[in-house]
Image (cartoon, rainbow, N blue to C red):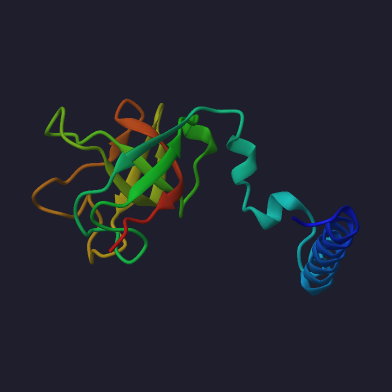
Length: 160
């Protein structure tokens, strides 16, 4: 049997070792930076405005196809929020219902032109395509406000 004095010394040694390991690990951790980098004026700029959508319901859709590669591709998930058409600008990626195949997966393409003639209409193009959707002989369409589902705000890339 171990006597009380040996047990007390052993316990003290364990506590000193744990304390030393804790001190050493905290000393080796990188220092937290509390201020923004010099080139960033505020967190809105740092996150490109995404936090403005945190008060909205975030939905997701699974990508099928390669028309938006390398931005995103087959089986990636795009995160999107419902927005008012007036909030959109050229360069935004929107998600919208397929105009000729109801019930099929929605399409996510980049806005290349916005027209307003009573209602908003968007000319879109996949990043991996040479022609816009309006120039493509197969579809030849502009996205209407009725077909618009929302603005893509993020991507969850599929594991390879």
